[in-house]
Length: 87
Image (cartoon, rainbow, N blue to C red):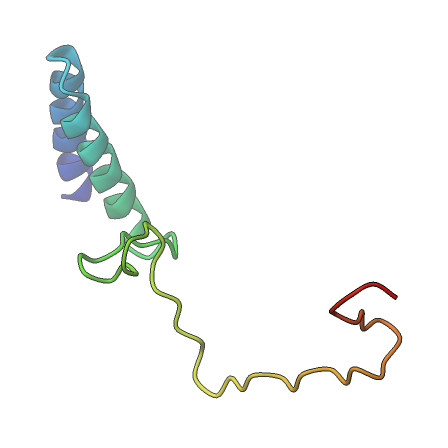
């Protein structure tokens, strides 16, 4: 059964390439890969509409649960550079 489905998708992909419809061929290629991997291959997912930050193409950042911002370093440590005027 699954071999028949994959063969049908590959046939439709070849038809789309022959018709110069490369977007449809890419969608069929992705469908074949998802079907072969059982849908659990990659952890990369397409971004859902509305999940982007305002005015950017990057997804909005959400820290993981339980994450706490670390304390700021003391200005008395050696790696701290003073801000302000000339010395």
